[in-house]
Image (cartoon, rainbow, N blue to C red):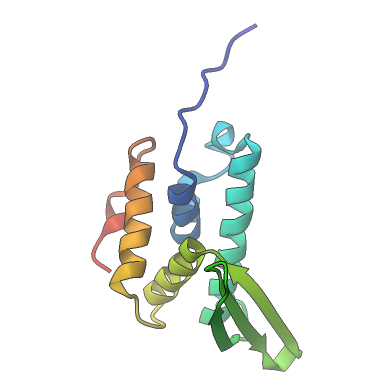
Length: 144
């Protein structure tokens, strides 16, 4: 019986940002051990949800969604409302501060919306912490 090495702990916030911005970098099949823990599975699920929202707002999933409003909740989360008129579909979801920053970062990279320095710094800090445990693509922290 061969003992598998225990994977190094990774920063969950950094992993979330990487999975939102460059999901192919940490493909589940290549980094299987990374996604075995329940915490990492939660991060993966949250990142998938944020990517889905970005795709809908950028129009990558046709038809394009329209942002209806944002509201900061008492617990600091962002309540985001959007709709896809052609489908009669409306959605509201609460995002953590980091999830909202990663979403804005993804939208900015997709050519939609401005990226505040606070959002940029929050995402970059999380990615730097992740980069201490895992190799990151050189252009991930490029000029945005």
